[in-house]
Length: 414
Image (cartoon, rainbow, N blue to C red; front, side, top):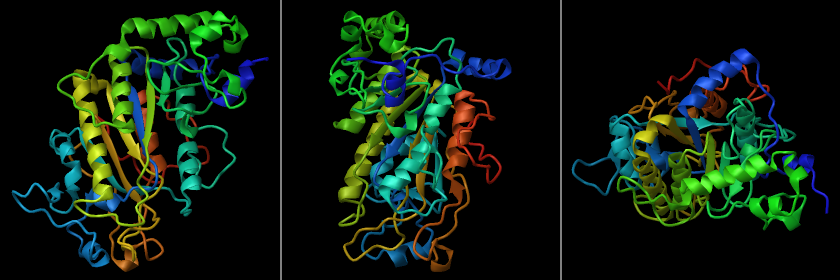
């Protein structure tokens, strides 16, 4: 069987070949971030989370009129079972109460009414557009985080520069820069869609079999990098500062990303996803299926921040979802596919404790197509600002081909 560097690159598995070096003056900007070890973590809530339940607009009468059975009640002083007031108009879902200390310490910022300008309500298409960064265009070959990785300086790159926790490399990280998809830190699998026989072989077996051309001359360097990771003991690092991750795939993914950060193996971009947000039936309010998902989500994010401790100064975590849910509940006490949703930004450099962007309102005449929360912040405005500021990716980098900023920067990062 013949393996080629081109096949490995296109597969989006562990592609570790040379990257295109940016112009020197741009590279110097990125070098400053490289020296600081700044890191961007992206978390995708797959299935279209109901942003109106994550952050409840309790000051909006239309919210309660549209959701007679699943609206969350207004905050009540001293009642920990109800929503948690943020600013007199918005409140946190009670299941997200672990995030309140992050809001109060200005580590958490919230962007409501955020989403894509594309009007699709297809999960598959909307996720693809959000990961490729090109709404409405299906032919884009790579992802926007993959393009961001390609704009980082190659001089100090390790195989762990871009990592996704999962069995397959997500669309968002595909590109010529290469990335790892890891099920766990104990197994380093090279995964390729074109060579199924390789999927269960680790770096050491590949190198040991003499398949040096697979990594185009970087086999020894890659092998040594894996040795470095193992010698750093990343997999043996236990959660610090009393962090308690929820059980399950999402909590485990965040725990392992924190291990990579604390092990100093050159991580710059990390990705994790969590599904289960498609709540057409029996969505619930303070309790129920959505509350259960949000409880794990909030606990996982809070544990991750606690685990990092002082390293949080180097890290920004961004949450996203392909679209939101309808303003009105349906006949099954759930919500259907909508338009805008809510996104979180957490980290040491975040100007938190406030909401960003314009609130479009929920009155019927203010809704998108008379049914959905309208998008007032294009996801590309948010993602571009976070990426260029956090990773020092040059603003001239075409992270989102064909896009022109629609408004002044939000100013989320200090």
